Image (cartoon, rainbow, N blue to C red; front, side, top):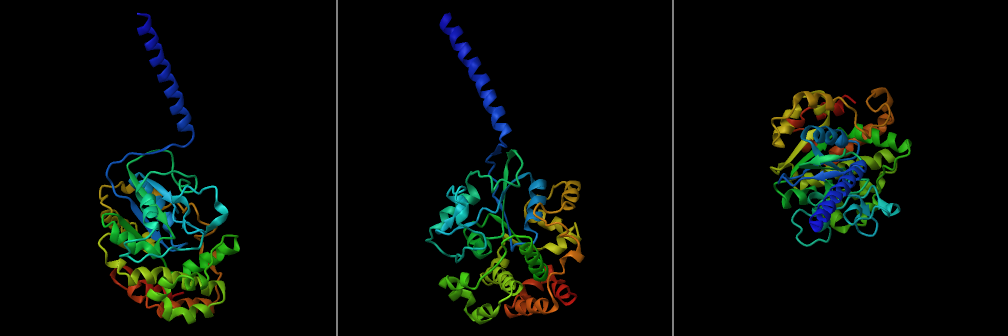
Amino acid sequence: MQEITTCKKKCYFKKIRDAFRWVRLMAHKPIIEIDAGAQPVLVVGSGRSGTTWVANVLSSITKSRQIFEPFIWHKSGHFLYACGGESDLESRDMNYQFYLRPQCSDCIPKEQIAKILFRRHRNSWCDQMCRHGFYRRRLVKSIRANLFMGYVAWNWPSLKILWILRNPVDVVESMVAMRKAGYGFDWSVESIKSRPELLGDWLAPFLPEMEAAKSLARRLAHRWCIEQFVPLKQGVKDRPNVLPVRYEKLRADRRQWARVMEFLGCADYDAGLLERESLKPSRVSRPGALRRKDRAHLDAGEIEYIKQTVRLYGLESLICDSSMDDYALALKNR
């Protein structure tokens, strides 16, 4: 009888201890993913293209855990947050984009990409946009995945990819403004010349123009073009699991979201919640970002250079199809 009483006491105290552990866990922002078999959604695009805004809206509507910018490159040659390197922040290369050929079968970072996309991991950087709670879906948002978007699309065909596109004049304007505010947006031709595969596969014909681009705005124009040119030439746009989406259309017409939600297999979404969430500014918007009068950071010569650079890379085929038919007008009216 005494043994039974002792056993009951142990069980009782164990329950109390577990309850305190749960309270302590809840106090430290627990993010608990329940494996329901749903494939992640990958939201990609160039910096200042609206990827954070789109990811915030979608994560709220679909109740998804948002993983924020996990593909930051470590200067020693790996993805920082795939290797638990949160304490080694000084070695981050925030402007580096890793390049992979779509049919590459033997590459070291493949396992790191798979870990970020599919496995459970936590760190304060990637979880900064995610509230505590239980999640059955995962949304990965990145402005550093364009150059291996094709690899992801080919190797994980059931994973849905939203490719966010925005007028490059607005993108470069915003990057220049953010640079003046202390952020590190930049691009150097050396980042291309140091990677013979990327240069040899796609970019060698543009090398003289890249080397001649001296001002920040002109360098960033090439950055934007390269980040769209490479996946376009790899055939990413025609993959069934990739949907190119214009940021301007999502902003102007809420009905464009219906197309996105249908692509994601979420046709029964809450339209009222979508309306409320889409009116909220991005959490990384700079002050005054939505006011056009605050955006005049480029002179007429730089704007014309961006237009010419877009034509140089032949990106009209990307932005003048049926889903992006107003892009040429947007450039003309700048």
